[in-house]
Image (cartoon, rainbow, N blue to C red):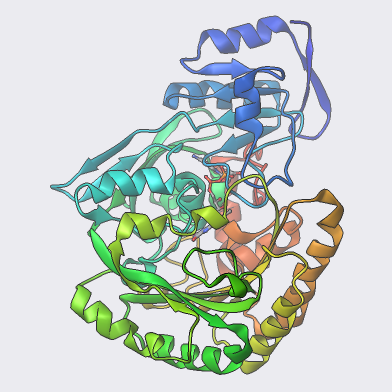
Length: 475
Ligand SMILES: Cc1cc2nc3c(=O)[nH]c(=O)nc-3n(C[C@H](O)[C@H](O)[C@H](O)COP(=O)(O)OP(=O)(O)OC[C@H]3O[C@@H](n4cnc5c(N)ncnc54)[C@H](O)[C@@H]3O)c2cc1C
């Protein structure tokens, strides 16, 4: 190997010798990989195919010691550092161009303690892997809706899914974390140890260090829940959404129902003539006593004349993976997202008008419903501040051909811009694409930003962890 040119943290070029890399490699349990190696391409390939970056070198860590060595190496040589958990983030910050990438995907351990109802989870674990371990004991914690997402990035941004109205955000169920900070120290963050760091990592993303282990609280869930989809023709969507709004705002915490507006995918339970037509989908889950669940979903099942209704008892772990076939990696994706305290008629009209004109069959508008336990936590209790958001609108643009980039992105921005005046101005950091850095201060963190910036100055004064939705250290 000859001298390698890398990008430094300040964007300039820096040169390292083969001896520098050999010294790093010699201390690792995991591997150090370069372009041309299969492991290098595995690590740099992430969910969103829009992101095609080539780090100069990649460490595939297998334990906390590898993380410490990599952080120290990056800091001592002033390198640009990117950190990958599950590699699902839309912005693609898990991979950097020209710098050093720290890939945590080999760190796969999950240890469930059924007696204390807690879990220890390493940062390479996906939601599906965590769910499978926890469900063996009839336990779960709130996670997201696509089982291939990484636990690490989801948790550090906040995290919500089908269980959140009952049990809160993923971060509301985080008990502690082991964190490698910018100085290479491994510290414990919890309510008792480094509570300021614990506050910051519950929503502050990867800004404060690399988490090498998460400890979660678990809840009895399943094995069966009441869940599934009701698919309606979009022609009646306006009336259906007005009813939906009324029903979910009065629903018990145990019921969560989200909405998807898109062209019907070729789902096996839909008649073939429906495939490709505009549909409104209610996706719902009740995780509790099944008889109560049947009553809770009844008002949604009574609405209109759907093409299909497959809501009923099913294993929780299966429902957690139900959307996976529509969300496989490898497509080009661009998202825009708004929080709302209420779903006004004007927003519904905008969404319906826009989704009818969607530029590709896989584009969709998605409306998530939060509230419940999520919104009973004060906005300053954790770094995640959006405890007033009752609904989240995501414009999910998804397509395959790079030639369609511009028209797909324009479509997403247009709906986003028109809906802005009805939104809170807040945005969930994990739904922000890479071009939204201007939304970090006010949109993502709002009232919590100043405290986060001060903690950034304490834990990462030189902003080593900058390849993310970045919180700058306070002056
Ligand atoms: C199809 C799809 C569905 C989704 N559904 C949901 C959902 O239902 N609910 C929800 O809340 N979110 C959802 N998300 C958003 C998801 O929470 C984010 O994409 C999240 O960042 C994914 O985490 P990851 O580890 O896979 O990502 P990565 O891309 O690996 O990481 C994202 C960022 O997190 C940081 N990071 C990752 N691991 C660590 C670590 N161990 N220590 C420090 N920093 C780290 C890094 O800055 C990294 O750039 C969804 C995303 C997609 C693409």
